[in-house]
Image (cartoon, rainbow, N blue to C red; front, side, top):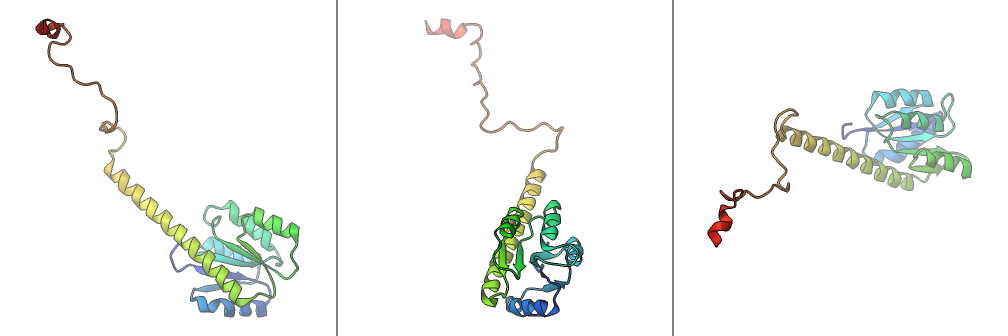
Length: 180
């Protein structure tokens, strides 16, 4: 995923989308929008999403359904998700959301400052994680270039124990006679 991944905002109410975009605009990240869970899934599968801000109640695929689907796919399973709900804290919803790996559950109306802080932290942490994964893949590729391919004789491990070489004549007992 490129470092300019979008923050995808998903809500079926146009006014809420506008308010969330206004709250997140000061972060300077690219913002995307979807008006349904199904549309969000399509955009997620196209890639380049660095964080999902998702309303729980959507027409078609609801917020938890979208997250369940995301977590089954390798390309989307690590994308941080912040769920938005217009209802008071529901322990069952919270338990289901956190069991799916949702980063946070935010009750509307949203405090723009608090939302920006959460989104900035989650987005940046995810981008650092992806950068570390890219660096690890590059280091592994360099290591594989330096190591011989399978089938070629490899050098022994530097700490492998090899018996010391015996001096000439040691196996015949000549050394024993010389000492006497």
